[in-house]
Image: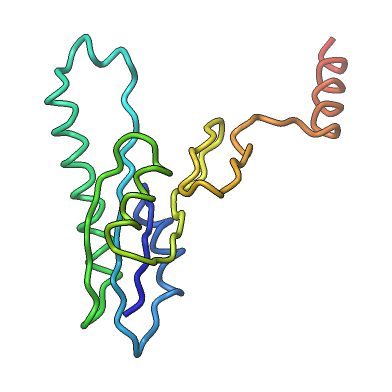
Length: 148
């Protein structure tokens, strides 16, 4: 049985990545790791730590229920986790527990946010930085000049 560790934070994006990877004849053990969105530090003023943890758990369960309903086929197994702390260390601890498994980062890329790596060897992508091409900058300058 093949084992797949999947880190996800969005149902539609994760299923788009995972459905082509299903093997029809072979059973798969899916280890699903939910990454709930971080709440701002200012929420601690209004919401207790236990309420935040309960919200994270509920959010993770709803996400994983939706993914499992579509992803699992007869004979597949599933294990659920909620990511806590450093994601690379969390993934490594799961691998120590279950043995060798493939790791897939199926988190939706977000503009302006550099996601932490899933494994120790994964390079950090700097897609989150807002970049401006030369053509876009020139077009903006022309619009400003035309407005004056």
